[in-house]
Length: 471
Image (cartoon, rainbow, N blue to C red; front, top):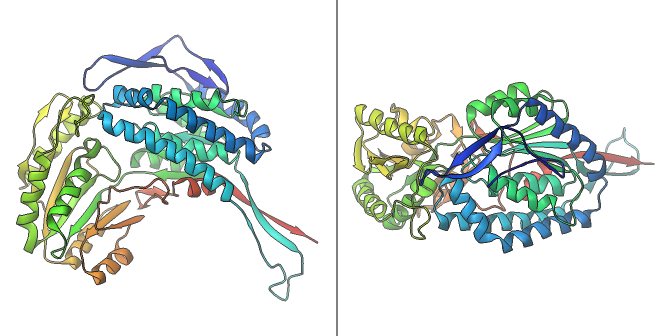
């Protein structure tokens, strides 16, 4: 139940501990030591020394290291899934899926690592050049700071530390304060592996004080952060000259065009809007529906939403569990009340029980309502009636965010236009914008961030190009 500090390979604790309660049962499920700025500096210093060894380690050792962690995680699948549900209240069936995806992320990291390479270039291509043996190679960047969120407290840790360590870097992880134990258990698999590189991974806990010390330090060469736009903005301004990869907020949207299979679209959109209680950066928040099928789609979406089971996250059939804390539930309630005052109509939901907030669909939503302008991060979706694709396109792109959008249509011309004209990092056709495969390049534009995740692309984020010219 105790998530301890890792100063490199050495476990440590503190005199003051912070307790974490399960969002559904409100009982203590884990605790972590309260770290401070000095702890962050100590972890960074250890990582700096560890990099001297990690950067020269054999590829075969790093491959076997990641494979060993994946194998051990396979054997602890149920334990890790329960820990996720304990700490963040995620329904157990989705916690099990997250563990499976984490294992896949580790395997994808190994595959991408083996395929990673440089290439030759022609130094005599221009008259000013000379013939030589010229090429570039990728080398580890150095110390990586990884800061992770609560909504996927295992797999999003894997997306950062697995590629970073596999590339030969040293890592300091600061996991979300809401889920310290799952991060500790995962880190322990790395640190206790027979193939581990000594002191290459450290883990510290905390909020702004610890995070700020990690980001401001001159030691790390890469900061990888997943979280809110305000915090991402602070990191960008305080990091100094180093790589900063940010996966920030989203305001995911889709367009329901009249030629699509309306019932199928509604089924998929219900899942996309309320999966993980809407606490997903690419949770479907805005649905723009062509006026000719608006009523049909709205009814189908309500019907599909009413089928979703809300309640105990430990029950295998539960789809929607609690929000992460009472503040999140209160914000959800306030979002809906504000929208209703502005003229929106509640089609279903708008029911709260403690940290539980039932799936809510709002109709008659307009562009000037706050609920379609900001990231809600709750089980709330808004329906907006539009004339055609051009109106939907204008409204979808009229957002400071740009993570992922989608379109449901059987019109090839509109499909091509959506791919070309949606202002976002990823486009999905005939499925939900909440869809993410761990192998894909994942990330956004505008305020949704910089850089890309997915093991192949993360290896590039966590490495530098070194050019070589031999005469």
